[in-house]
Length: 437
Image (cartoon, rainbow, N blue to C red; front, side, top):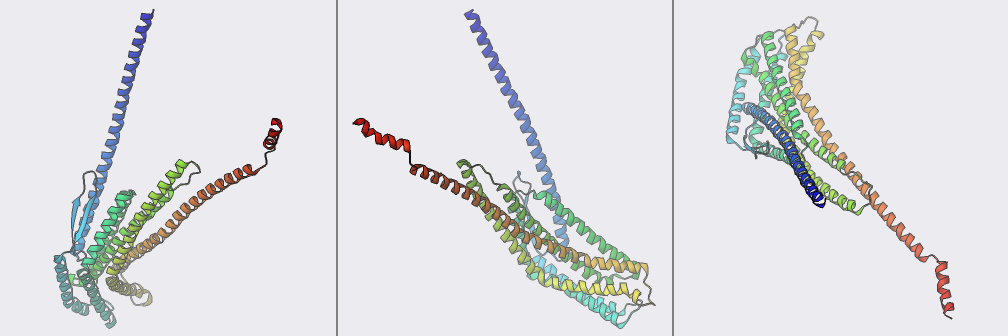
């Protein structure tokens, strides 16, 4: 019997060991399947991110080539790929003398175009032509060419400033993407889609204005130099200003979201253990380090905003002046049939006038709204930091006060227990000598 029991126990142990080994291999197989699924998901996410980055990079290059053609990008750029694990790219901007020469040629052509456009404006025949309208249109032509020359001159003399702005902005972008991982691809993808829609609308409106002007007045290409070319160039100059302000506004929003994320991480806990206290100190130190890094990013963004404002301040004055003058003049043409009873405005002329006003006011509205948004984000940063500090300091003060009150209560209780008269103990001590006697 003992031999049979021993053999059965040995068989049972062997069976249990085999069962355990099979379970181990089964768990390893399941872990391998799960790891494979995660790796496939990760590879799919990396591929999608790389595709989105390629599309955004292609759109950026196309837009930059267009800006170079109209003299709004005198610098050069180069794109360097990062490691294979990261789908991001590094884009740097450099000073270029060729761009300055190209802008100088454009300025010369604009000055020479006045010898064609001004005589054409004076000699062209149209209904209700007066000396006042001739003077207004001649002044509009000269003002438009002057605004274009000022803009092109600003890109020649301020190219180094613009290169510094672009490189600083790219550094801030990469620093935010590296440090905080705020899902920038989603927000940036949405921004790129909005920018694409805005550019398509601007180009479509320009083509509609050009077509309606041709069918309304049968204007020759020389007439384009009087109003369409200046409005087109100044409008895209404002669109470029809008694009830069949009990127800066998104970066400020990223900083605010990072600070709000830190405030959500710094949640209070009522457990009084010393282990939690040590862990809470470590978390607070990490939050302080991240706040210092966010402060540096915010300072860089403020410096970039100041540089952008200084660069665009002078040419935007001439651009807004031309746009305002053209709006008033086209508004006169729109309201003149209502004021003058003998004047009839044809439908094609009415459509051209309305499209002109939309084409002029469209970039102004975009730029003013975006500047309002960036001012809101800058003001929001102070409120978010105040909320984070008040929450952190409030929780710290509460915990320290609770700890101090508890400590002093324990000390006071122990002190009272030590000084309180113990009658039984005293009587025993007094009776001890009597017992010895």
